[in-house]
Structures are given as C-alpha cells and as structure tokens.
Length: 113
Image 1 (tube, rainbow, N blue to C red):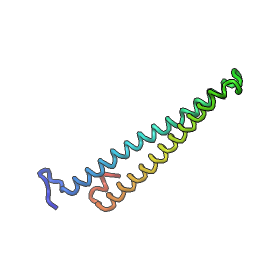
Image 2: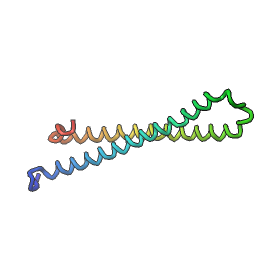
Image 3: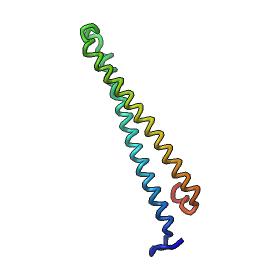
Image 4: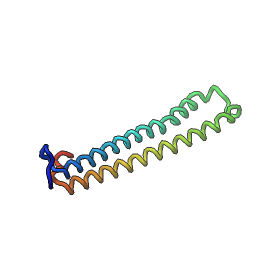
C-alpha cells in the first residue's frame, strides 16, 4: 500500500470514507424512522380525540365527514408503517455492511467499535 503525506495508507482513507457514507445513510434512515413514527402517531391521536368527544355528536349525522377522515387515517397508518419497516430494513443493511468492512479490514476495526 502506498502512503499519503500524512502517513495513513490510501486504502484506509477510502474505507473510512465508505464508512462515513454508510453512517450518513444510516442517519438518514433514522430520520426516516422518526418521520414514520410521527406519521403513524397522528391518526392515533385524531382517533382518540374522536372517541373522547363521541358523546357530543351523532354518528349518523357526521358519517359523511367521518368516512373520508377514517380513510385518510388508514392511509397515514399505511404510510407510517411502510416508512418504519423500510427504515429498519435499511438500518440493518448499513449495520451489516459496516460489520463486513470492519471484519475485512481489521486495521480499522478498533475505530468502528
């Protein structure tokens, strides 16, 4: 391996760069997970408000408003669930890739742990 002026091998710098990119992608997946949890929690709070105030209205009279709201809530639950599961899958993928790199290049494994 050839070295740069600061003494670190070029390959180690490339691997560190790849790990930095993987960690940035993992951070993005964590932000997506946070967004998915928030999107998933919104319909639950709306439904709990509807249940808490249900004695103040008649179901028959508010049904034209309630059905689209419930469909919107169902869509938000599906979107939130998809964001959560996709983020968890991506986080596991990035962790696996980082573990592969640290196993392959033992010289940088001490910096990753």
